[in-house]
Length: 172
Image 1: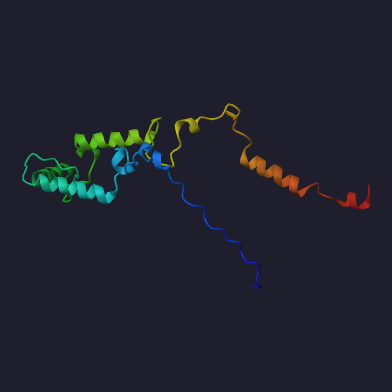
Image 2: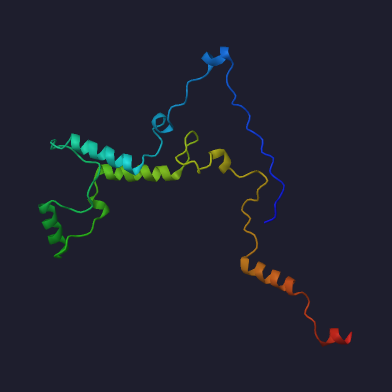
């Protein structure tokens, strides 16, 4: 490469600092978003650590219901009963009827989250606020437009233009 004119680098300006008397008027620094909001999604590692700590704390409690539920039936009596009901030598697959009330409540909670409609909180940053989801007044409503195959045919005919024949060559 040829030598070009050197780039004129300019130093960055100094940091803006509060005046000596205004230092007491500054607000305190913001808390970590994860600890400040309970709506922040929990990371898989943090969830796993929380479930393990909870299970360890309740390991001697016979009435403890763990949050993590196995999908496979391990109770020998229920396995024998299920195999007798299905008339098979294999345990039946998990079905929604096998789920507990807490699992059903968790499924309902997740379905409600998917509907996304809370004006004050957002689960993801990519989720637009409710005000942005409203169409503008000038936007066309209930207009389906032209069918794609008709549009393709029309554009193809326009691109080809008028087809010439012998009469065009003869000037007739």
